[in-house]
Length: 311
Image (cartoon, rainbow, N blue to C red; front, top):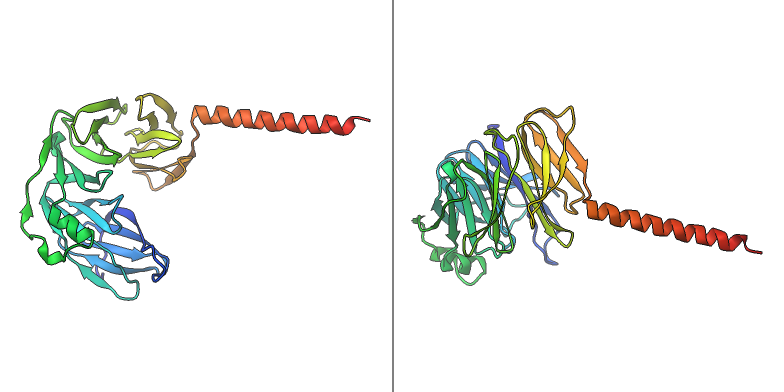
């Protein structure tokens, strides 16, 4: 790319997992000019360009099931589905979208099984989309890309009564979707039935658009989200309970994005100031468990010392 542009969104993409391809990880970035670029971290260069959007790329999402399957939501009113693999760091390529959806979305996320996706838009609009059988056949290597229609996809299921303000972030795990509007309302709902499972509210959000993150593992199900005053809240996704409130006197600007580390022991924050902040975070239950382990180790140490002193 010869003309610099503002970078609006980014997401990690895993490399090919086989013996014939060198190990690599890719960073996908979306620009204000509508161009999406894929960067090889191993080679430190752009290796693919995804062209088609005519407005800023608001959000990018990677399939949790199919490697290289990417969704992009743009201010041009469309969401595009891309099959990015295979990628070759030695040969720059230009790719076109598999499907184009009439979505008008600010945010997008794949469902846990990778067969559906959710878009969040203006005035609380949530839409549930299903990937067509033709698209799935191409993604699974059972058909050629020419079998997919290039018509604008409009068929979707409207998900109502969740939000009234703009939906600035959506995330999915298992068969659930978590959607957030810019007034701080977060709703966990079932993708199959669209019934609400849980609702929580992030205080003092104003109308600042901000993305949240979820963590779902053996440690538990957690959500972290920030507000317009620079404060981050961690919630239990199963109960809705507020687990902790993270704040620092030097952070006074609005939070624009927060992320859990892979092991969920750190939280990273970016906001409207030019800094990146990181907290170490351990739940109360884990702190108690670590305390017990330390006490047991101390007890064993004292027991060993006592045995050494015996005549």
